[in-house]
Image (tube, rainbow, N blue to C red; front, side, top):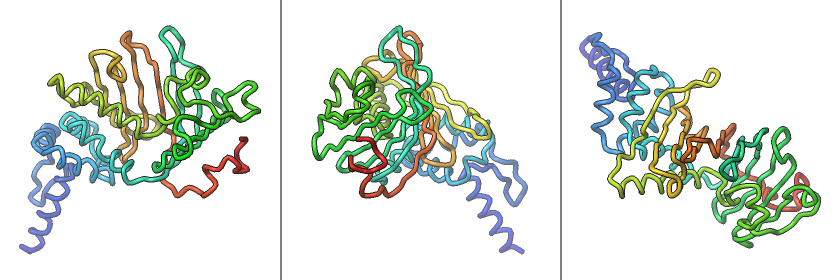
Length: 294
C-alpha cells in the first residue's frame, strides 16, 4: 500500500512539473496559474526552454487558457522560440506553404488577394525553389536560387512577358524589388528568427526587457495558439513598430507573423499553412524538373 502511495505521489510530481495541474495522491489542489507563473519565472532560460519544448509534445495542449497565459507571461523570449530554433538547426531540408500579404511602401493597401507560395528549402548550400500557387496573387510565377552557383542572382519567371521567358536576375535588383521588400534569401524560418534576434539584441543594449509586451491565447477554428506581441521603439531600425507571432502549441512551429509600421498599419502578414520536414528529391532544385516551367 505504501509503495502504491509513493508511486502515485511521484507520478503527480512529474505531471505537475509539466504544468498539467493534476492533483496529487493526497488530493491536494491543482497548481494555480499564479503558482505556475512563479515556478516558471524562477527557472533559468535553458530550463524554461526544456519545459516549453517538452510541453509541446502533449502537455501544453491540455493546459487551461489561464494556465497557458500564466506560462507565457513567465517565459523569456529565448525559451518561447527555442523549439523553433532547434527545429531549424536540425532540419537541413523542408517544404512549406505560406500565405503572404506585403505592402511595398507607405500609403499602399495590403494586396488582395494575398500571395500563396510553395517553397522548397535546403540549408546548405542555401538553395530554394518557390512557386506562386493558384488562387493567390501572381499565380504561376517561379524562382530558383542556388547560392553555390551564384549568390547574387536567381532564375525567375517574374510575370508579364517574363512569365514565358526564364531570366537570371539580381536577387535585390529593381525587377525583384518591385514585388517585395525582401530578397529570395529571406524566405523561411531562419530569416524570421534572425530579425527577432536582432530586435531583442537592440532591447538588451537599451536595457529593455526582452519578454513579449503582450501575450494571450487565441483560437482559429478548433485550434489554440500562443500569441506574442512585441512593441518596439520605431521601425527602422526594428523590423516593425509592433510585431505579432502565433506559436503552435503542439509543434515547434511559427504559424503567423505580422508587422506594423510606426503609424500602426500592417505592412506584412504571413501565415504558414503547412511546414513539413522532408528529404527533397534530387531534381527539386533542377530547373529541368518537368514539374517546373523554366
